[in-house]
Image (tube, rainbow, N blue to C red):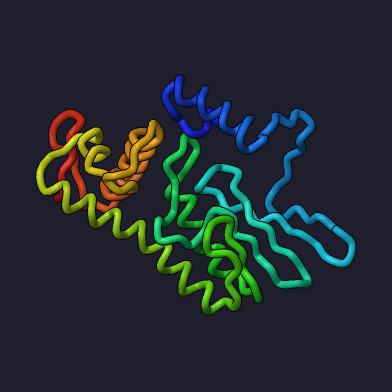
Length: 203
């Protein structure tokens, strides 16, 4: 888990210590994997795995029936927006997972952070659309910054994810990985081009 954050070695070790001592996370060599669609029968209700990659490769939600409750975990609907800045994260997968959540109509939706429980598919989809729109705002911010040729490092320092006052060993790696994913997507759309070695600009 600590390695998945992609931090510098000293920060990785500090994170490992924090996870162990503060959050009481322990290795589980006996853990068994599961696949999308796996159903756990709890007697009187079932929990179905809904694979929602992007935040992490194995990120999953859980559909609880007959209650009609979908736990969407880190598709958390906060104003911060989608997070896809770790080593195994994927913006493309995250957007697919958002679309999948949008298509699941249930009575309640639960998030892992801040927003808690949302009642009704209409309310959930409205908040989900606002959450997903943060990605487009990051695209727009990057295009505006690429009015002249820039490197990935310059984009990371400019910041697409964190506000200026946020500090920590995680900021640089997250910003770089996020910048690269947005660059790739904008290049594919013909909106950004390479302008010399390691430099990019808006077309």
